Image (cartoon, rainbow, N blue to C red; front, side, top):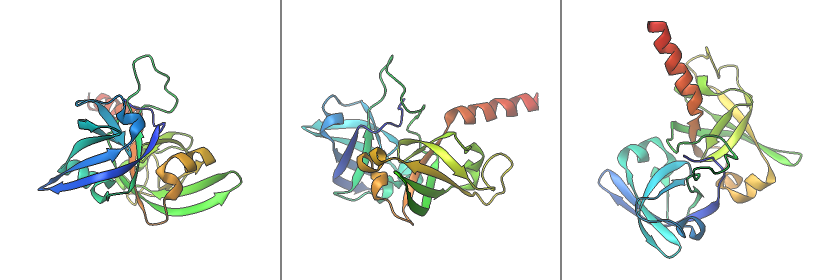
Length: 209
């Protein structure tokens, strides 16, 4: 489990595209320092299993499903990635519960500066819109953020069009994560609140009974 509090801004050091999969090597000396084969590290919100470590970098295999459902399929050598190690048992949950299981991708449709923060507007797939609530939590490229605004077509009972939501980024987030460099038209990984998904599932089961 992760918290969405990014520990390090890493860099793609190597990328081998295989038949239906890929092998990536990430330079991130902080997170790689305590990693070993079998360790989990979230790379821009995607939980990956370490297969090798070498000094300040680690290597992981990425299956085709992950490449298709996340932005990892568009990685390139030298590109930046957000890195986070799992929260240890008994550790502080400074963000929110993040599994590293990307639900889909959104597109940056708006970007505007404000007083001491920056607002991003992100489109969301229709099937995820019901899990987005104002003042709720969402992980964007692995970063735990609070939803500051939603469109009328987002949330319970929303139309199939999907809609959008907004997040407000403080200078610390802009400086320490990849979100400080995104532009309109860029894709980002989205993970909605897992608690909302479980509640929906339980309620649906109760209705069937």
